[in-house]
Image (cartoon, rainbow, N blue to C red; front, side, top):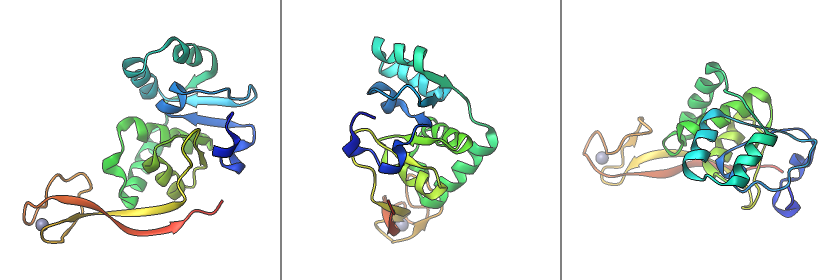
Length: 177
Ligand SMILES: [Zn+2]
């Protein structure tokens, strides 16, 4: 956490953090007293897509790899369906969120959909570079032709008219610092 300006104040306490792929790839100098976690899917993704010696060394020396329980994974999926973010999340994203909930750790991610669900799920979060989200948002999947709201969050086209689906903001509220 070497960029104090971009880190939310309450997350600067020493403690447990869960890192997503980007947070490991761009790993900065996390204080030694912090306990850093990630998940098996993140490590697979990191080694497949972003393989660097620096990232590998970080994995070997600093990270604890833990797979979250099925119960937490299911809980996070339900929460992501409620917020409308489910279509924008990969299985890796869901695993990371689930572990953060399970460990009551602080989530480190630049991903706005993940931050949005973290807010809905009561998971504390922070980001390393981009400013974290300021508003919590719930989304609807809406047809641009007939206006129908799709209940299937991962639908590709409107079930009524076959029209194109877009994501529309249903409601939002500011996140309190
Ligand atoms: Zn339609």
